[in-house]
Structures are given as C-alpha cells and as structure tokens.
Length: 529
Image (cartoon, rainbow, N blue to C red; front, top):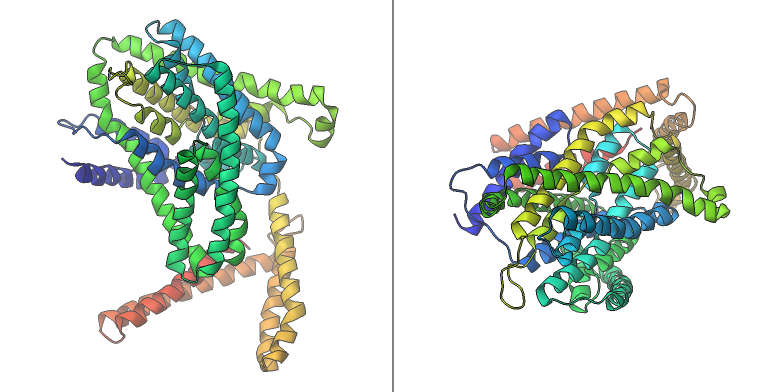
C-alpha cells in the first residue's frame, strides 16, 4: 500500500465515523480516535510516515487560521488576562510539572526528553470541548476562554518543544538564551502576522473572482505561518494574528458567494486534516508497540495513567490561583470583572482536552540526532501522548454533560436579545432608506408597499424576542411560514429534477436553479427567528 492508497483509507475511516458520532452526539474527534485504535489492529498494516516538517507546515496553518478567523476580537480582548494566564503560564507550568514527574517515573529519560513530553501534551485543543459545551448551553465566556487559550498556547508549547528538540539533537541548552529567543520569536510572530494580514486584506479588495478569493484565504494562512517560520519567528502567533485580522475585515467586503464558498471549502479542508491526523497515528501504533517490547504492558499503562492524572490535576490546580490572586493584588480587576463561582472555574479546568497539535508535535519528532544517532524513546513518547489524549478526550466528554447540569451552568439570553436588537436596527435602517431608493429607481409604489408590509411583519416578530416570553404567537406564525418556505423549496427541487431527467431543461439551467434553491435554503437556515 503506497502513501496515496493509505491516505484514501485514512479518510475513508474518518468518514465512516461521522454518522456514528452524529448518532450519539459525541464530538467526531472521539470516534476518529477510537477508529485509529481499530485501524492499528488490522493485520499487515503498512507503515506510513510523513516528513516532520510537513506535519507542521501542512496541518497547523489552516487549523490555526480557521480558529482565529471565527474568534471575536471583542470577547478575546476582554478575556485576554485569563487567556494569557492559561496560554503562557499554564503551558509553562504544565511542561515543568510533567517534566519533573516524567523524570521521576522514567529515569531513563533525560531532562530534555522530559521537557519535550511536557511541551507535547501541554497545549489544549478546544474543538472537542467547545463542541460539547456549546451543545449543552454553557456560558459563552467559557467557550471564548477555551478557544482563545487553544489559539495561543500552541505557540508557547511549540517554542518549548523547539528548545527541547534542539537540546536533544544538538546536546546544548541555555536558559537566558532561551528566554531571549522566546521573546524575539513571539514579538516577531506578531509583527509578521500583522504585516501579512494587512497586505492580504488590501489584495482581497482587488480580487473580483469568488474562486480566486477563496483560494487566497488558503494562501494567506500558509503564507503567515511559512514566512514567519522562515524568518525564525513563531508561525503560530503570525497565523493567529493574521486569522483574527482577516476575520474582522474579510466579511465587510467579500462577496456573498465568496463567503459561502470559503466557509464550505474551509469546512472540508479542516475535516480532512482532522480525519487524517487522528487516524494517521493508528498506522504507527503497531510499530510503536512492537518497538516497546522492552516494556511491560502494566508499566506502559502506569506511565500513561500517571502523566494523564498529572495533566488533569495541574490544570485544575492552576485555574483557582489564576482567578483569585490577580483580583487580590489588583482590586480594580475584581471591580471590573468579579470572580466566577468555583463551579464555573472547575468546569473550565475540567475541559483541558488534548488534540491535533499534540499529535502533530509527537509525529514530527526527528528520527536522528545531529550526530546521526537514533532519537531515543520516540515510541514511548508517542504511546504516552496517545494515552494522555485518550484520557483527556474521553473522560471530559462523558462527564461534562453531568457537570453542566449538576452545576446549573447555562448561558443567559443576552445573546438572543443582542441579536434581536441588531436585527431591529438593520430593519429600521431599511425602512428609513428604502423609500428614497424606490423613488430614485422609479420602483412602483405597490411593490414598495408590499415589500414594506412584509418588512414590518418581520419587525413585529423580531420585537417578540425582546420580551420575557419570546415565543409568542407572532413568532410561532413566523416559524410556520418558514415551514412553508422549506416545503416550497422541496417541491421546486423535486420538479426541476424530474424535468432534468426527462430532458426538458438543459443541465446548465438545472444547476443554476438548484443553486438558487440551495442559497434560499441556506438563508432560511441562518435565520433563527
């Protein structure tokens, strides 16, 4: 089986996990993870390896850019303090504690190898956690902090990872030099990301083709990462900055079709990456287990269990001091942002899932040192990383619903009212300006009045969302209207399909009409009132 055949098999296994994940309402990453375990049991499994640099250069840029693109800069800025404490402080603290524990239970590990393990499993992955949290209706701020943390902590962990690799490969390490280099790498990444995103936004404005615009979003993501890395700076920081900047400006001028196409294209790409990475590890497990023949199974389980427990407990222990100490030292913080309840903080600490960055990092470990000697303990590092991922993914997945319900954590309806107010402002702007537009373009008053009548009905429905009982009769009538629209779209689609089969319409006409119906259905799906 060659690489292309193996890649197709990997994606096929990922796709098979989708209906099962949807059926049981569990994040896809869990089933991809379990699927990789089953893959590893297939007899005669081929050995599939990737160049270490390809793992980072190919997988990380789109993951980071997409996550940053959909991050709210307003929410991110408000929560910058807790995000920073988690993304920098917790990652360094986790790496340190894991290194100490790994050195104690694995005496054969060097300190560089122990810190390497800490760097690999220190960063969290918010995708699985937020998928559960959002479905359970947990507070929005938890989601914001988790997503913001997972964006920045990758940079911190990967810089420690880089230092650890260098110490192992070249056999040297200097703490003062590392601190200085850390500052330069981070600052340089900020400037590169800002510069590239500024140039990219100006180029976006010049492109007038939806395919080229969508393709350019991919180029922006990869350029941010690769240029920063080539200059010796943090590609993670550069990509995150570029993604946030693009996410803020791109929707303001991009064509409607471009935004629809880009969202679909990015969704497919991220699915492929997640499926590929989570199942790729399954192809390496047999070789890893075979090379771990000197270890007893009970010892391997012991190592994985201890490190997993340390990772979980360290996060919970860090959350509370990080929340209380800044408010004790600076009362202004407590006045502006009162401390959350212990239940809220515990839930935030419990959602420290590990994911694709840890996988990519452990897969990218070089096979040889600078002296052309085998990189020792690689298989053990992969196994422990795999075990920690399993523990931090599966345990919170099946316990978070219970915690959210037990702690009575539910988001307020502020977002619903804020959305309703925004819709009202937009509708009022239309009502004020549409008559001027109609007169200027000589649109018949009968058409204008009919349009305004429908708009006023919509405004009445929106206003019900501001009441204590938003699901009024008007709102129910509007939902009934949406049902009629869905049925009309279904009937139209069935009719043009029949006409196409009978050769009554040309293929191009069929596709144009289908696209119109698809866009109308997307529009109705996006309207939650």
